[in-house]
Length: 346
Image 1 (tube, helix red, strand yellow):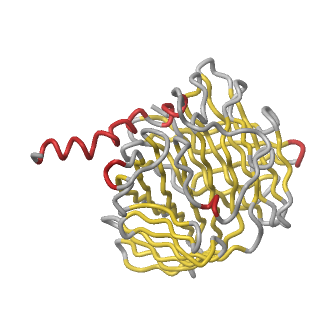
Image 2 (image 1 turned 45 degrees about the horizontal axis):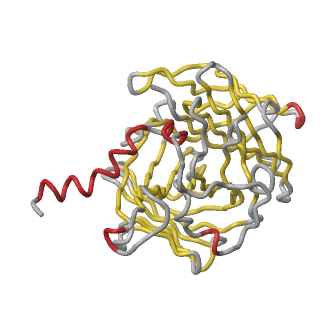
């Protein structure tokens, strides 16, 4: 096999990813489909589900240094299947890719990695927990206590995390509906991590502490074909309560939304379409497009009427699949910090 053919064999699966997150609404024939009333099996479900088309282990963190300067951190491992199931070596239909980023008030650093399944370069082990791609790794005896490492051309980080609360199930006991047509995912979170470690930035090392939030989600067709992207909020309030909310933007200009209120004790209340509302207040010109980076979010049943503002409006992820992801500050009826992800902004 000549070098050009080898290059194409390796890169062809990743080219399919360039359709962006809207491609998650394409046909899922042959793959397993999430069903209501799931029964989770831990720690096995912390591991991969190769019969489903798309899956992620998605960690974000709000950090501060000794002087009170705010930072954000992201570490995400994705699994995407070209066909259901798995196999050894290069016969594996599984594709792995990962994103890592650090955001400061004045800069945003992001990078990505790719790997084919079956090669040992990337994967997940449920017990003891280990998620890796190359030298990027999240690992520990259980998901409750892990270390986290990643590096890019301009940054690296080495962190330790410890869960201070229970896993949280999004939607109806972990069955998260994404559209009026019934598309859904299995979705749970660990939003109670304490995190501490060192960022290595162009200006030198920075010791930081803070709070982190891990999302686990898998599906085969999590969007409907009329949805173009989403605005997703994970908000941690100074009261100890938390809230996850998302809205999926539809081609006719309407939104489909869902939210989960997470009490400081880990208790949850799920809210259906329309209960959570996110309205753009201010736009930022970033990467040649206008992106909403200040929002008003409302969950009236909990008295939430808050302003959510990006720490750095330029937190664009200029990767194979481009999107916006960065830390936010919360003011108004509730005060705190969080993370905002926005996809599908062309």
